Structure formats: C-alpha cells, structure tokens
Image (cartoon, rainbow, N blue to C red; front, side):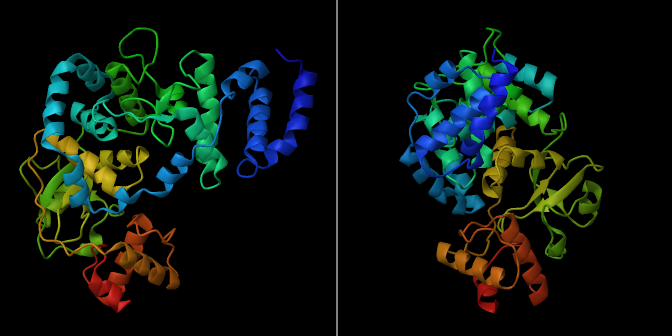
Amino acid sequence: MKSILTAALFCTLATPLLAKTCGGSFNNFLAGIKAEAVASGHQPATVDQFLAHARIDKKVISADRAQGVFKLNFTDFAKRVISADRMSKGQSNRKKYAGTFAKIQQTYGVDPSVMLAFWALETDYGAFQGDFNTLNALLTLSHDCRRPDLFRPQIFAALTLFERGDFSPTKTTGAWAGEIGMVQMLPADIIARGVDGDGDGHVTLKSSAADALMSGANVIAHHGWHANEPWLVEVTVPDTLDWAQTGLNTSKPVSEWAARGVKARGVSMPAAGLQASILLPQGRKGPAFLALPNFKVYFEWNQSLVYVTTAAYFATRLAGAPRFDEGNPDPSLSDSQMKSLQQKLSQKGYDVGKIDGILGAKTRDAVRKEQIRLGLPADAWPTKDLLSKL
C-alpha cells in the first residue's frame, strides 16, 4: 500500500493529466487514465498490465455514429427483430431454464417473458454477443468527447473486474459500446448488480445464462420494477379520445381510461387502480398501448422509445398476447424530412436536442405542442401535413 505522502504526491503530479479527460493525444489520455487509477489505489504494475495493449478502435466510432436502426418506426423495427424463430426459441428457453426463471420471479417479481425478450433482442439468446474488444471500446468512447462521463468510469470498473480475475484486457469481447454478456451489461453494472445465478462462485455473463438472467433481473428490480405487475397492454382507443392527453407524460388510473372507451385487445384490462399512459408510437391511426409504471423502467435499459416499446411488446407476445394491430398510420417522415422538421422546431425555440433525424422524446413533445397550436390532432406523430404547415 502506498504511503499517504506518496499518494498525495502522485495526485499532485496527476492533476494536469486529469484536467482534460477526453480528446487530444491518446498517449496523454492513457497517462491520465493510469494516473487516476493509481491515485485511486490500484497498483501501478497492475494498471500497466491492464493497459498494455490499449488502442483506439475506429470501428467503435463508426458504430457509434451509425445508429440508423433507431430511425425506424415501431412497426418496422418490431417486424425486423421479432421473428417466428425468436418466438420459438423464447418458449424453448423458458422451459430449459425454468428453475432460473422461477427464482427470478420469486426474488425480483420480474416476469420471465420480460427477461426472455431482453435476452433475444440483445444477443439472440446469447448467440451474438459482439466481437469488439471491450477495453478498447471503452477507451475509444471515453477518449471521444461525445459522452466521456458515461464511459470513462467503466474503464475503472473493468480494471476492478480484471483484478478479480473476471476480465481480460485482450480476450473479453462484447458490444461496441462496452456491454458484456448475454444481456449486455456494462462493467460497473456487473460489479454493482451481477448475480452468481448458477452458484459456481463467479459472475460469468458470457457463458452462464443463469448468471446473465439473474443479473439482468437484478438491474431491472433495482430501477424500480413493481413486482408481478404488467408493463404494457395493447388497447383500442375511440376516435373521440382527447389526443392531447396521450403520451407518457400524462398518467391516469386504468379505470378512467376505461370510462373514456379504452379497451384491452386480446387480453384482460389491467387492475383498475393502476396508473397508466396511452402510448401511440405512430400516432392515433397506428398501434395503441396502455403503458403501466413498469414500462418506464425499460428506459433505464435503453433510451430509445422504439427499442423500449418493441422490447416491452415482445415480452407481452412471449407471455401470450396476440400480434398488435398495425392500423393505418400516416407514413413516417424520411430522414431529410425529419431533420427539416427538427430544424423548424428548433427555430421556433423548442429544444429538440441534436438535429439527427431521430424522433426522440424532445421532438415528440415539440410536435405535440405545435399540433395543439395549429389545431391538429395532438398525437405527437409528425406528418407531412404538419411539416408543410410549419
């Protein structure tokens, strides 16, 4: 263990290196990582070994910049990722790991279908876990100055896993964004929420389905999952509904929605006292869902409404719900049209975030407000008519 004087001296020397935590020379960036790691109590020799083969991975940056999948609408994305094969494998895995799912249900109150859907969407039930070198992915995204505050702490978490013998700087691989294992968890989440589901004394998310599923359920429970409650229910809605009251920012008791003519489709209506929102991922003419409190927990896993809605809907299918009614929604705007819409909304003073062609929460909120102002049905779904009126 370093003496207090030595540690204090090292921190003093490290300060200039830590002043800039992203960008610049990669060698200087690595020096800052090493300085911070040693100042935090990690042994210099261990840190050197951990970072011995560190490098920038340009493919990671390319993957980060090319997330075009989130520009798909809900119907198209759901059709792409929810296949008959994934449905069949989901039911097979439910039987194969029945003991693990029973333990998950008992411990965390998370329905097996929820974990099966995540498992399928993240890695196709463990078949495709990613071949990016995890350490280099984290270093690359931390050096890049878009989101260093998200990825830099993961480097030190990976270092801790390395010290425990649960991470290899050269052999551990995963997704381009640094997630590891069958349900794709970041190193810090593995440390905080990893569960030894198979009882072998290790948390091995790449090869142990029991570890991965238990750990994922632990993460979900930590973020406020309401045990043994539903998360999403497809509904039909009357044409007379006040569309301005739809969306995730408005919540009412299920009984009140029922009184307004909202009906469950193919399954039972949730308990009358539960709070719920009307989710219209493609506007009033497309699919409609009741989003219950557990639905919001999905956003702790992923921030994309399209991904979250698909994951939640997939779980309902695995639990026995029918295919959703596609309806006849107005066509999605093209990428250039969506960017034009965002620019027009931004010029009107709305904060829509980055002009990226993605219909995110901020853009939806601005669309709804403009629909109200223009006297259009306020369902937050942007159309060519809205674009022309702007």
